[in-house]
Image (tube, rainbow, N blue to C red; front, side, top):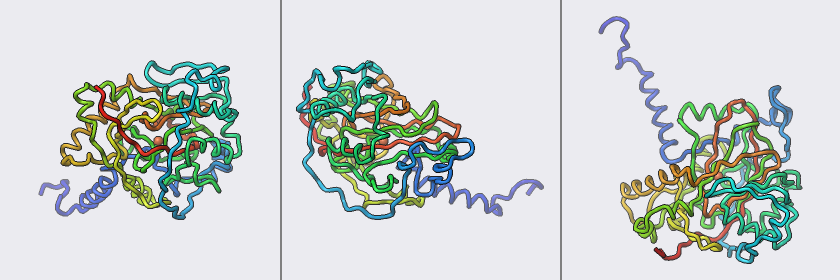
Length: 382
Ligand SMILES: [Fe+2]
């Protein structure tokens, strides 16, 4: 062997690399999560006292605590549909509001009203308005400053709160789901060592038997720019398909799995608070109030079309994922500001976080997650 060349037989580092890559591939093959936050990633010192470069958390009582206790399986329940009783002219919700559409196909921005002060009729109208607009940013809201229980009570008008299987929660409020990245956190940079982008289209916890409907997320702390959330209109994504293709999708069901999310949490030495589950849902679901049909598959949690062979299932699902991701004309990039509450209808939308800020700013949001009906479909109408 020529001097200076590495002998591939004798060089054991190659084998070590192979094992490391194989282990990473195993984790990355079916589950992608841009925010790999967990029990080991919250820097309480920086959050409570500031980091030198960044101020302390504005809402320390909303910091995540990682309670390693097991919750029982979610119980089936009869879902309420507040939007069904709503006045479609929205007199209680929008009489004094300023409303601006974000795009032609999805999204609105509303100012001039206070969600927490809505009466019963106003809450019903909110459900219908959000089902129609798909996602709505309400500015100058007091949610973050209310006692946490009051915010939860407001959201539970729309259904019982989901308890996330792998989330940290504010002390005493296991039903509040937190999205939190500490100041100076490096998980984003670490993530981009392995992935080219942070896009993870999904609908929240679609693996549950009764996934969320009207869903609330509010900002506590965030970067000056960046960290937007991108939403897509899954009803128009369905309508965009040809009638023949729509017809083929009707009657198909797919498996949605929470097992990989739980395994990913355990691999990061974080917690799993409930036994993970899988459920089968129709690929086209019908909204119980508007009657709209919407695509209901997502690359984060959907695994397999029931009755199809793997290659067939992979091909059809990949087409739908590409369709959802490429339809930028059905998407709205929603911007966060202090005191913003974003409300979306999780039954007819998909969304993805955008991990794009590099200045180490804290990002801290709370989600209130009322569960809704078990997804169902109604016949193809042509
Ligand atoms: Fe989400």
